[in-house]
Image (cartoon, rainbow, N blue to C red; front, side, top):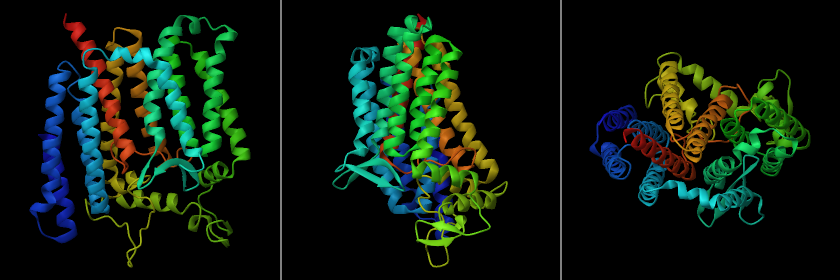
Length: 424
């Protein structure tokens, strides 16, 4: 009820700000998604009655915030996003129905999930299917359909790692040199993904998930330290040989210049803030413009007088900047607190899980969600180099919202089993 009411208020605020009238058509989105999440709630109550009661409402709230802001930026994109949310909720319900009796049978197919994850990660580098966007090869296009296979690969990689580390946990915990093999293999794969796709954030996300799950499985901080060191060494190597990654780091360290530099976009000498770092600089200005209380939903400044967007890719990579301007520091901080609550509930599920596979699965899914949020928000706030990773549940993108609802289904399945066993 609360999520539905907030969605209705959000859409009404945007519509009033845009057209100075209240239209029942503007509230159609709110009504439709209220019914959609009510159906999702009923499915969850039937299939996983003992699951954590807060995760689905939090996901609904984040999706509502994202859809409201996307509608404010581009109503056509909001319609497309709405279709993908329907697909994602349908797959969420299907996953709960299929795995409600025992999701742990997924462990039987762990190697299949691992190979599929690697295959999905390699799809963007294929000459026919791969698509380069903003210098990174993260997309695959089949006709009119375009998606990021890395989003689904993330889920499959977590399932593989949960099954493999549950099986090899005692061997890995002994810390013998020959047991470092999996660490080195995953490190090489992460570096290959980073090198071929030119995506610093993707390599950090996959390898970070691996290190977190390895620590949960073995409780050896030495693995984490060694893995972080290997990643830093590999990243420096990729930085030296990959111009796109080197440019991202340069933009991060020196987004503003007082003297003109060569602009590869125009082929002329320009200030860096007018060329390579244009998006990042305008995003920082947008956040600063929001001040403490924000300009209000629908009242942010995101286009020039002649209608051109000030920040390119605003509803995908930089939607947090738009929200920070219209909701202000208070609203942006509240949004991050919602993410923190989701992560807190996820880690609680991992602690309550009784078996190794469930514990590793919940921890991996939760940490992947948290790390992805940090990478995109940290990039926008210039804490780390900017990447093209989406903000979970909020950013525009079909593959992202589908993957995150499957992640949510996994956490609910683990939570349902853990709570049911505690009540016995």
